Image (cartoon, rainbow, N blue to C red; front, side, top):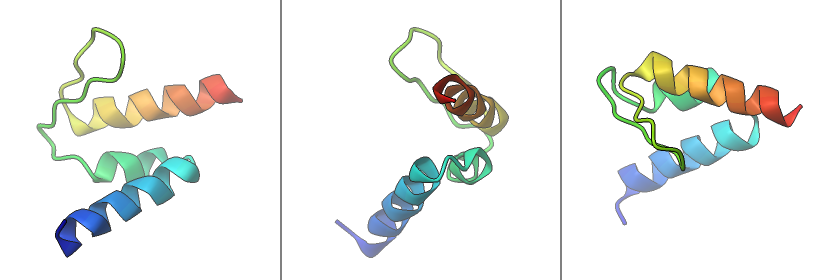
Length: 60
């Protein structure tokens, strides 16, 4: 794998492990598509951020 991919994966892991929703969303483009295990496809960076905020809230 390239260094750029490793860098992104390292940033994603750190943001995920530290429950940093803004940092998670920053890894996606403004027009990103994101789908977790559910049927709904999210369609922008803000939706990805909101998704991660809701997941962190569910855990606490």
